[in-house]
Length: 387
Picture: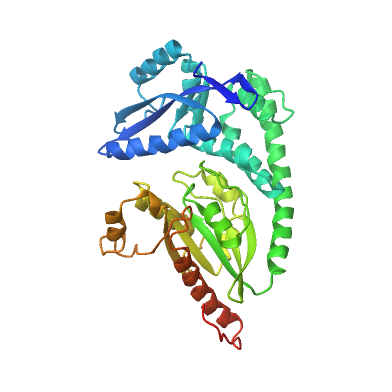
């Protein structure tokens, strides 16, 4: 009974049961591998998949044929047969040939990390722009990987009108259809991006502030707190895919605050490319608020991922307010350490968006940065009141 979901109407449909698979390469720390798989399991849970077991294999480099060794593959095959597992999720990208070889052996649904992320984005996208961006990234990712997986992916997504099928002729037909879709999606995205540029220009010279951070650090919760609105906030990865922009006024000084899609390690390159227009909210911001889940054991690694992504999209050379969120989950001694010199260059404001701890300190810091930027835009602006 543990592989069934319970909805408000009761027990009604079967969950996919999965195993997750990762590699420990060379002298890589096993704790880091486990942490990556923790994240992969969270991604699977976000998709609605029940993870039954995780497998880790130590190799110097991924096996060119199966990604993992043939012996480990056989072990996974035997386990899946005994436990009725039908889904296999790998923590790294699989090449088209690896995907075909693994499918032939395991006879189930094969996902790699990129495909899991794309699937979540596809389900989460709300606006026309985000939907087109994800569909484009997904098609570009799947094009070289069309195998038997194509039919089950299209069934579960309610995909296109392609015929699918296991034969080579059907797959080649599908490839032609996908190439045509890619062309059409790029044209649609170009039109939407053009409209977005116009909309951003129409906002005038008001100061722009963007919330950035690793996925699931609490950006939407903080957005709701600072703007008194109700943006979707869930304890799931990528609860926010679409950018949300709200006008905020702190003590007479207005600015625009954007909640943006969270970053993550091993983010598919095709997704970064497709979401460049959404990330323009970050690139065109005057100030960044880098929100960090300080209760997470790998928070510094997460910070590095965000900073690297900001460099990739050319948005790293901006004033940044670093904010350590979820301090309600850590001990007081850890709070003291965070404000010490243990992490040079990592000092920031400690807050809890949940309990509102130090929110006024954050507001004051944001206000000061916005006011400085506001004064450069409006040199004759005079501020007579204090925050």
